[in-house]
Image 1: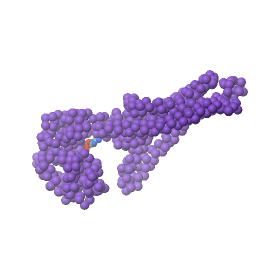
Image 2: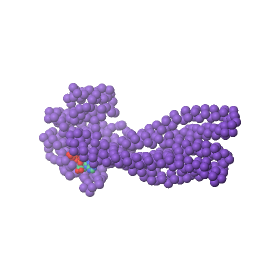
Image 3: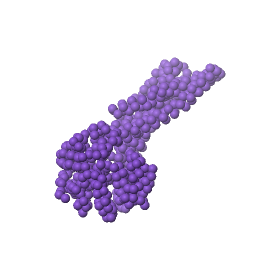
Image 4: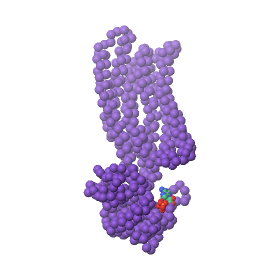
Length: 540
Ligand SMILES: Nc1ncnc2c1ncn2[C@@H]1O[C@H](COP(=O)(O)OP(=O)(O)OP(=O)(O)O)[C@@H](O)[C@H]1O
């Protein structure tokens, strides 16, 4: 609800008052046209020449209507796009500033759907709102005209409109439930599609995997989405049918039943029926708007829920590009972290007590699932610790300096993402890239120009080397490599441990290596063993 209000206030700011004024003016011009046509028809029926005043009024209203529509359409398109842009900006901004935990909780598929499709749905609100304004004005104008020509006719029309709306509103709750259900089904379906796209190799190599995933997950979900969409659309189309039927039944009564029963509604039934036909158009466009607004409302609620889940990180200096380029010591005391999972067998890290000095070369080893990667995420401030503290040169790391602290680290994660560009590095630093490419033995494979690698279509080991180039060019005081050498060939692995790492140490860089390569442990100054979330420093 809070987000809905915030969104509406944003929409008002974006649209300004212009969209309402234009909507009202267009509606009025439309009503004027209808009234003039109706007056003219009256003359026609009486076989008199229509008055030149009416003809002049018709031309003027028509001109006005076209001129208004000409600008109004462009205004609507601009407003819709501004809304989409605004929603995307807000969402992307929130994702950038959210904690890694809440991002992981929501998952990339859901966020992708929100950014791509759902924001576009929200953009429709501009066109819908304008439809409402114009239709309401036309209906009001025609009702006023009816009031002049027949009070009974006016009351009858009001009753028909009220009935149509009451029925539509009564179905509103059911409609929202249906739309929500459909959106949930779509999400589940897209989740499986993403699994299929990510696991294409595994699917291609084994037809049983392909069949299993398709038959038991994708196909049934796809069919569920399809049948829910059909039932939703059928349900929605019945709204316009409802409006139509009520009107045609009323017209039938006026034309056939009332004369039979000798009930008089108006002096001129033909004129009244024509006015009803005029109202039918706007009413027919208004009734289906109710389910469409429901859809937008559900989308806004999903957006609000996502915004709530994406908790903004408590980091006052988030936007700071500043990195602390030197430090003397990082002191970790009683640091703990616990994953919150659905199962009871949750993993707990720590308590960790560790002092890392500038220039240290630390190797961390331990079995699978012992907590090495988790330690890195908590140590670098990516996951907020459950307990304990991190101090950098006697300065407690908290929300004031969290991002500056993080900026000190150059990390290559086991599942790192390789960017084609080296973002946020100045030209002078970027000049070293070609040299580093040579160092990692990729000079024949990769070129760097205009701040971009010309290709990243490389082998896994080569990609890791490009990631190393990207990390080193940033000239960070602390480097962390999480099983970086795991997919390097023996020669380059040797070169990495015997040349690249010692060279970084010579430059007084602090290097933390997570490794299973026990035969290189001897080059470390300090060796830490991890077991069941706890650390133990070993003698070297
Ligand atoms: N996102 C998560 N949610 C819940 N539990 C997790 C999550 N990630 C890891 N864990 C749990 O934390 C434990 C430690 O995982 P971690 O990735 O830190 O181990 P690791 O020592 O780096 O293992 P490996 O050598 O296999 O990479 C594991 O037992 C795992 O079950």
